[in-house]
Length: 274
Image (cartoon, rainbow, N blue to C red):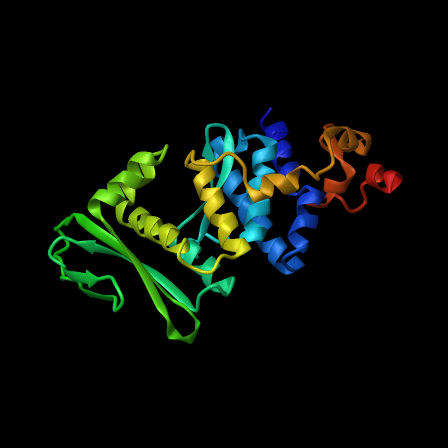
């Protein structure tokens, strides 16, 4: 049963249709790296392995559409299970990268403001923002009192948005899942600031897909750009017609996915079907 479950999600990850969508926007080298990171995520999570096939496909396609990476060392994007669905989540770092890569801004960043920091800002015709963080002892656990995000547009034009604690708490309450907020409150506050600042920036497809994906698994919308592409995928009937029996495992599999098997070379069944 465990081997069959592993085969099921492996076949979905390596689906040839997913690869086609990836290669429409990224090169094959990038595709190969991100698919390996995706496979590692699933291998290490029983909850992800139980997610629906359609949601897995949508989440992986969203990686290509946004340009973010699942590389755990970069901490830009993550595959997470939500009520039986696989969702692509982003850190504030990931959102910042997407915004810069899509050329809507020259630079963007977010910062949390803690108790004891010197912080002041003004809006209007001559906006300004001053933040002087206070050094905290390692035993201190100061509260987050605000968060802000600043974007530098081309020609050095700057835009920023500030969220006070009330607005941050309101965003937390609207989220369906509170676990991440409890563990990483400051990081989530910064991500919220970047999401809201995005509304004031030049709109790009990559950033739009990222924000929509976030809103979807937070319960704010029900369809992503990736899901629209998934509608073009071949249905299960087509996959069954091209399936073959693996002589090694004895499990029915798909010829187009045999590339994930290390024993593909010399496989008589694959050679006959080729």
